[in-house]
Image 1 (cartoon, one colour):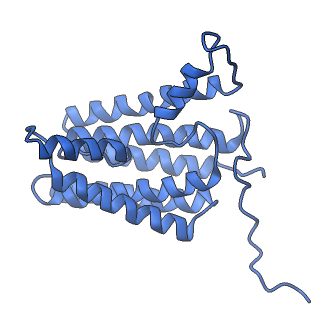
Image 2 (cartoon, rainbow, N blue to C red):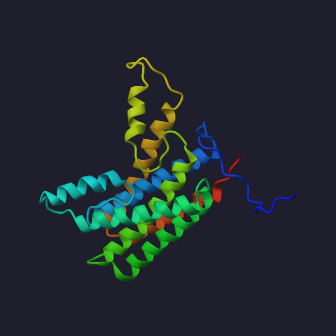
Length: 226
């Protein structure tokens, strides 16, 4: 009996990418740069919160509760809640499918830029921008997690850097992924620098446009060869 399932190609197998020149790995490097850009915008320009790195938000909440000046419990909670919403949506609708997630992320970055252009980022409006960015990052994180590419989570580097140090001659270990780990750190820095520069020169909305452009270009160039 013929199948009535949609003719959509199967999702890419978990952990399928092993080479840094693989189209998926290249796409994830691009998204790592976007994460650096987005966190530069959210931390420097939006109440000292993180839209991509949720570990940072947990720490920031602790700072704020202890009375450290310049930190916002509400901002960090907004980011956490929006990130979790995005991750839930990503787990439901885009698991294993990178391009739909990137299309949605691009739209959310553009929406955040539109709000920033039209109304600025002062007062309560900054929480709307934070929420849009964090939803985008949660959606992407859920999708990237489902792909299972080692050392390329696109938003956090702690375990990547741990592997970089642990798999060395000093530790009497070798790993074929050392170059990937170095490139992940460099690409995040490469995104952080222009994001920070644009915010510091009062061009925060244009930083969000840049994030949308890089995400869209990544989606357009990505071709799954699985």
